[in-house]
Image (cartoon, rainbow, N blue to C red; front, side, top):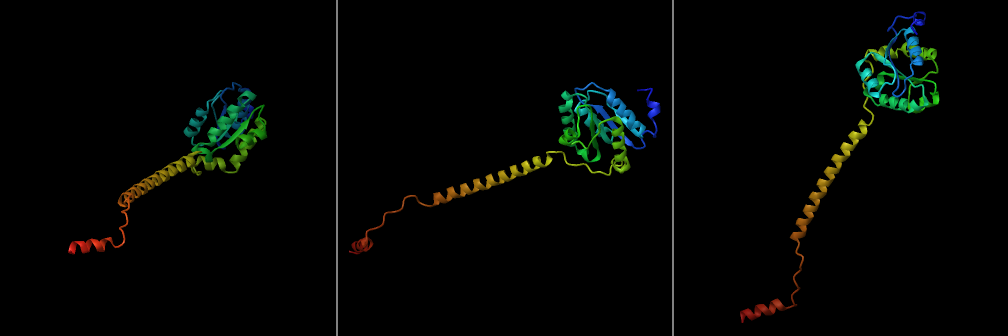
Length: 215
C-alpha cells in the first residue's frame, strides 16, 4: 500500500473535504478499505481512517468530533457483517448531524439494492468509483457547505413521537381531572336530591285538620 501511495497522490490532501472511513464492527478485512482510503486521498480528501471492526458508537463520536467531515464511508467484506452495516447506517441516520453527512457503503457482498434498502446515500463497487462519487459531492458544493456548518441539525429520529407521547399524556391527565371534577359534582347533586319522596297527602286532609284545630 505504501508503495502505491506516491503514485496515487494527485490532489492536495484535505482540499476537497474530510472523509471518515472504517470497516464495520465484526469485520477485520482492511485491504479494500485501505485502497479506497488511498483513492480518496488521491482525489484531494483528508481521510480519517478508523480501521477495522469499528463499533457504531465510534463512528458517531468521530463525526461529532470532526465537524469538518462531510462523508462517512463504511465497508463490509463479509455477508455475516451486512447486518452490522445496516445497524451502523441506521444509527448514523438517527443522529442530529444527519443533514451534514453523506453515507457511502461498499464491499464484496454489498449491492445497490441493499444500499437503498438500508438508507445509504451512495453505493460504489470499487475504490475508483468511490473516489469519483466523493468528488461529485465535493464538486456539488456539499462538502464545503457541510464543513462551514451551513446545514442545520435535525431532530433525532423518534423525538417527535416522544414529544407527541408527552402531549398525549398531558391531555389524558387533563381529561382525567375534568372527569374527576364532573364525578364529584354529580355526587354533590345526588346528595342534594332526596332519595325518598314524601307520600302524597289524602285529598282534603289538610282542610279537615285545620277545621279540627279551629273547633
